[in-house]
Image (cartoon, rainbow, N blue to C red; front, side, top):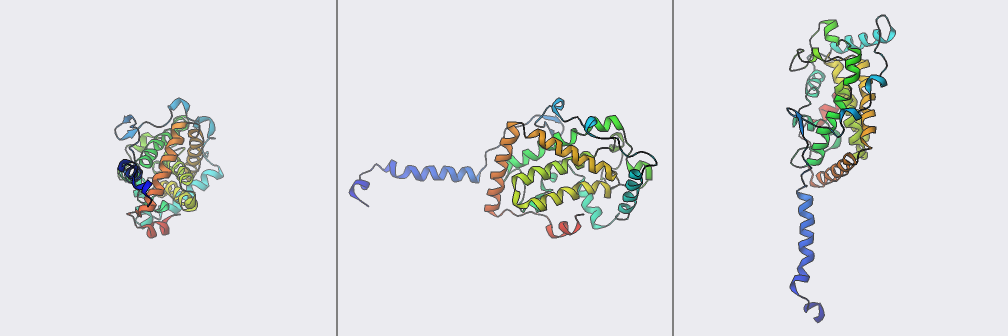
Length: 275
């Protein structure tokens, strides 16, 4: 070191160290995202007001009608899935019914290859919670318009919903709100972590199929739910607050991988069960 360097004030020599420490602190302790209003117990406001949602009643064609080949296909798929009752796939379907947090945060953790928690990835956690609201409620217009009965009402067979059928009986089948959420999350997470696109989309598909396994939805309910979920994600991209949330979540996913934060699920078993 030269005499000139030695003559520099100590503050100038150590300032870069403090700056680096500050950057590392930000990486280790992500800033908490802006809070969102709770519109129902446990349900946060989405990124859009309901008036800005894609109109699912106009986007969704009528569900299969009595005597149609489409309805026969729905009924046949339902019968095949009833045979899964009591199996490991049935248990995964039960797990997939849970949209409350923190349980739902881990839905895609195996596909992402990281743990997803409010503590370690607060922006991703908030993104999942708020986009859930947008995707789930975006199916309401079509549900209210078509008022399709759920399969368990028709076939009188059990469902795998832990809460039973009382609440869902009041909510029409078509399109599936769960399938809309699962597919919306899959599209969002594929953008955040494109390296895992195949695994993420496969998980999003199996999440929707769990509704058929559960005897809570027909196959056509799930298929149309995915369409509405995709429409909602496309609409969300017009909102700067949503795009900012995507970027913040992407940084958290990268940081979680760097830290080696692994999922706390049996990912091998989950992959085998996905269908």
